[in-house]
Image (tube, rainbow, N blue to C red; front, side, top):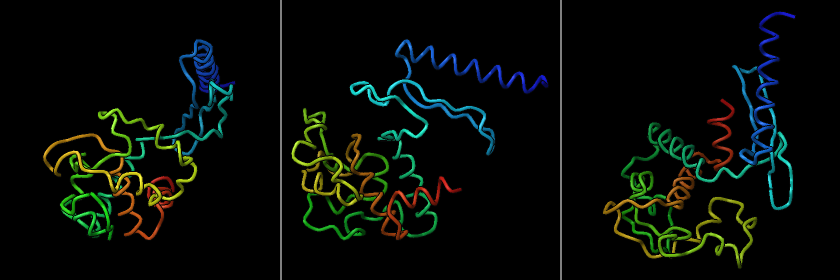
Length: 199
């Protein structure tokens, strides 16, 4: 066996032992993938996907990515700005043709990207609203498309006039996702897959 092959096998064993130790100590649950170019060097699944139900992680486990998707939404938005489809100053409500909303027509793309829109969020934690309460009367699996989120926030009063403050906001990125869909003709997931992952 060559020295380099031995080192790789030793490294793989070390990594597996390392993550198994973390799993045993309940310090890590997740999936690890290490690649070099298109070559897979190491992969492993550790701990629980659900501690409550004692379901183990597998290499096929799907994880809730939550706010990590904001990165893709921001890049997609900037790609489309770069292509000339709209600008940072484009008024979002008019662009999307949304009517019957409490969201100000002054809210633009820049406000959404920088969390300075002032629009109401799904669960205003600062006002003691709970995200879990959103799903008491409607199951979360009923939200299948980007536009399915609209009823959860478009009628909420703004927290402040746009550009007057900064407050973290999830639903500004839903509006940006709708803009991506409108311009590209693809649903959000398809756009991200085509423009990021397939590349």
